[in-house]
Image (cartoon, rainbow over all chains, first blue to last red; front, side, top):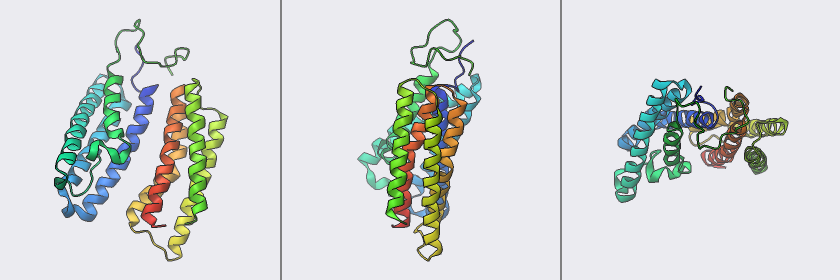
Length: 147
Length: 118
C-alpha cells in the first residue's frame, strides 16, 4: 500500500499551504476592497496566488489521484508565477507599485512562495504505486505507515 | 502596547520553535514539553492581543483596523491550531508543524507592532 500523500512531510505542506491560503486570501481581500485602484495588477496577482494556495491545499488534503494532479498543476503554475513575477518585479519595478506575494521571488514571505512549490513538486514525485520501493525521502522508517 | 509583552511573546515562541525543531531532528513526535510550550505561547499571545485591544479602547487605534484584526485572530488561533494538526501527525513531522508555527509567531508580533505603530 503506497503511503498517503497527505501524511508525514505532506501534512507539514498541508499546514503551511493552509496558512498561506488564509494569509494570501485575507491580504488580497483587504487590498482589493480598500484600495484596488492603486495597483490593480498587483492585487489581482495576489488574488490569483491566494486561489492557487487554496486549491493546492484542497488537492493535498484530498490526497487521491485527482487531488495530486490538482496540487501538481497548482505547484507548477505557482512556480512559473513566482519566477515570472519575481523577475519582472526586479527588472521593471515601476510595473508593480505595490508588492504582491510573488514580488522579489517572495522575499516578503521569507522566500517561501518560491520554496513551497518546489518542495511540493518533489514531494508529489515520490513513487506512488510501488509498495516495495523505499522512497528516498527521510521519513521516519519505524513509524507505522498508516498513521 | 507594552514592549515587554512583545519581547516575551517572541522569546517564548522562539524557545518553542527550538524545542520542536530539535525534537524533529531527533525523530520525536510532539510531546508534553511541546504542549506546555504551546500553552505558554498561547497565553502570551492572548495577553499581547488583549493589551493591544485595551490600548485601542483607550483611544490609540491601529492604523489599519482590518489588517490588525486579521493578524490578531491569526496569532490567537495559530499555536492551538498547530498543536491540533501536529498531534494528527504522530511522527517527527508533527514536531516540524509546531516548530514552523512557532517561527511564524514572532513575525506576527512584528507585524502587529507595525500596524499598531507602537
